[in-house]
Image (cartoon, rainbow, N blue to C red; front, top):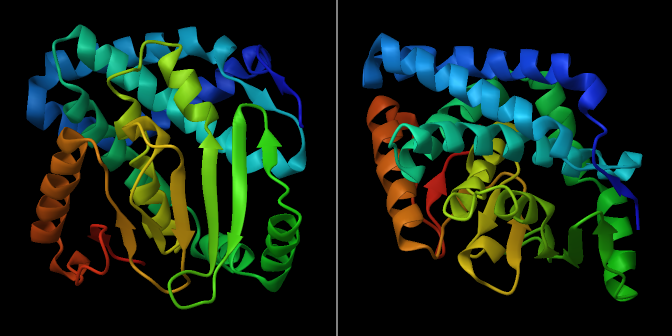
Length: 265
């Protein structure tokens, strides 16, 4: 199992804070429109302070194969910092997630198209399917720090490749740093990532919802379909989906299966 370290990011604090500020820039107009200049400025300052406190505690997993998991952990830490700042000012977990969702959607969509295309091609490549098929047949789970995953290979009809998360480092990090209420919302960050990167993700349950595992299913060319079994989180997904569809009717797509639809790009 690749080793997980804490303290890895201490020497990288300046770079992480710079990136965090850039993400804050993406939603400052929305923040000011909702809360006014004074509170928006206070929320931003407090979120930065919370993130700075979290940086030394963010786990880092060694090895090239763990790169994606490290990215997810950094996103979780940023969103957790926003939640803690919002909570301090009497704002709800739902409000915090809506801001995080907006920032992540804008940041992901700024990734160059060629890079998004490459990441999509890699996920659905024959090489990835071959590796996952071998691990599935061997019943060989993948362990990366606090993450533990089981691999599935689909028939191309319902899904192409699948992963069951039976252990989640994001959830454990959030739960150990005051994010119990916010944890189910953090899982919904995959909506913006799937949309931008063309994952075609379908997911109906998560560990944060109290389920036994997270059921990630990816299908090339499909719409993102992510739902939550936590009622208030599902309500937030539906409300934000309606709002985004009103702003951009092209986002509206038919619902397939049990999930809620977000369009592929």
